[in-house]
Image: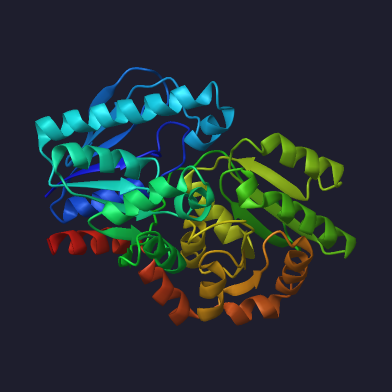
Length: 383
């Protein structure tokens, strides 16, 4: 089987979005699927095609928007909309050329928008069927946009198969497609062993916890910092590590300094996979304060690390935390609730009560890097 995989996010250099996609492709390769990735060139306006490894090639189509997300371009209107059109036109032309020369059996889009729209247009002109996987931001956020919602519905309804990486997300994606069945296909990745010079501090005697992700408002790190301020007021000795890079870095740094949390809350910057492993081993629990999610990668990584979690009740996180007894679920944006959960979790006996090897192993298997790719392959193989 030959698959053209279209994505608006693919890890390259300092770009960390779409980090689950390489492991998805490698599993598909073991099942006999050859993959050609189509994504935008975030570093220049030239189109580049190269082989990543045996069984996987990639085309970076040229445009002038760099790494700016399309949602941000649309907000700029006068300057952004022409770039958004350029994105779709160049993506379509590059994808159509690949189909003409390589003849894929299926087009697979990660995210219903923008990748799904490009897939739908290519499919219409080439008659090659396409399918999509909803990944949270497209369905939860973009579908609420009056301009984008009709496009997402069109893409979903005309997709041969629909997948999503969350149970609640499957339901919502199916609803967009007038009840067409949507199949669960997890997104996860295998952490590598590469390390930097990062080392956690000496936290002997402290309650330690961490949070991981792109430094963006949607990740809710500002609410975690506000919760940390309440911990300090309650005389809890703690250290919080926030790992990641992003546009909110300076705002978060200001909030930490103005809350007198310097040294208590550490912004680590981007960490290598080996650093993340070490940090997870080092801390007492993992916090996911997101305002919108499906099943984030950090949840599956935290489960694999056998750590208790504090999550917000968005997407499937609250449901999974309760079903598998992973820890506490709190309402999003409620830093008072988050602080209360952290105070409880600072008790060693309470933390220990959450870990059940059978529960963690079962959920780890469901959310494994291989399970999502195999679910997609099996459905596509049905014809």
